[in-house]
Length: 120
Image (cartoon, rainbow, N blue to C red):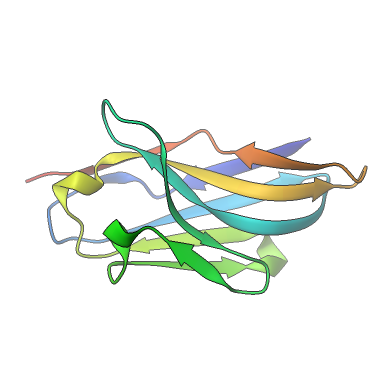
């Protein structure tokens, strides 16, 4: 079994910062990409940022220049540093990872989600 546990969400004023963390645990053989999706109120879930094991990143245009993703492969952990937050960044943020388990099966795993609210 594999679990993704997120932390770091909360309420922040516009222009503020938050740092999200997500750690994968369980019967993990390897992790390829790790990253974040978000689901704003009343909208579809959308990709935010991703990082491969080798360090290549991909991000949504809406967060470029404001969000930074990093990864600690030894800890199976991915971080999302969110700066200059805007009210439109308000959403539930979900961690996502492409994991191969010890049995050799590769799959897509999700965290439980963490709420980020940007409001004055």
